[in-house]
Length: 224
Length: 224
DNA sequence: CCATGTGAAGGTATTCACAGCC
DNA sequence: GGCTGTGAATACCTTCACATGG
Image (tube, rainbow over all chains, first blue to last red; front, side, top):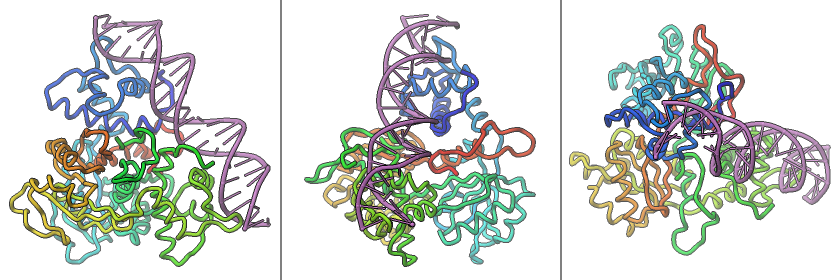
């Protein structure tokens, strides 16, 4: 099934598989079956095989998948096979945490620039990155930075995105709790932390006496 | 269409609508049409009407929806109509940011306890919450805390979840980059920040000369 | 008239079951 | 024997078009 559009849900799961593989290889394994990977990352084995089938033959029948080869393939598909330099805008509590976050490196993502409007913060170095005045965002294009993380208050989000788009940024991870728009050439993923937590009570079994409206478990991504 | 199972995708969108409504009411509006709300939050108007149709008649034909009434209804459906007390486990960079995060209050979520293994941190007060020794997690059930946020390193995630489950916690938002399991009575949402960012390059238009494999825009939730 | 609410149609993703291959 | 890869069946969600009601 070589020539088939890749379902968005599959694209959403690929990083999950990749994460599992990176841990697996640390544990010294060389090969892994769809069954074993499925258990490890928390999906069904046929889901994994189906997802991989959109790209070509990754595995060996009777054996499984070569962990290293599979990880490399997934990185290529997700375009994580080149190091991507990213800028952070907004070095508040959340922004600082993101600067210190060790998890990005595994996906080839590297925060190399940070911006904040607070004069107190400008010039300070956090986790090896010097905080710059926002006016410097104009020059982002010439610094080989194609990705940005937006961690500014809601009121500043849209104007920040506008500036980033103008500077040639092509992908944005937005933590501000609102919709932001940009030219089609700029892809935006919005991640509202509070909103994720807000989904939780709905799926929680009733506390005390009232009954829960749902019958069974939830197939919703991210919820178990 | 009163008696119909609520699609998970609808449950995922309800917090988006609620967020939009909360901003709208701040702007002094009283009523809003599906069309206007759709534009504001970034979905289609018929999607909104369809979503609401699973619950009953919220709106008035020819007029639209009462913002306040609609927000109250959505909160009731999501079970956000009571204040929920939450515990935070892991007061590192990310945990500290979450403690300071102002966005939870709007959904009735209140972090009232924090735990960390670091003796340096225990006893200190961050954002009005005193950091406690993890042994205190046992008593969570008796403190009217039903929700927990896990922001510990991957290696500590599963044991943390185990302890929380034992203490009677019924909902967990897990920031550790791994699968965690718990008894069925405990609902878990895992949110891996790096993984979200890892999806971005795939959707970004090609940089330089190579061609992008995708044809058009993405219907994937969170991606625009 | 205007905007909601909803059957019906269409599309997409999940799940199954098994053929194919090592 | 064991595990992959995939067509077919099923379930789910989105999209449309319009009847319905203030």
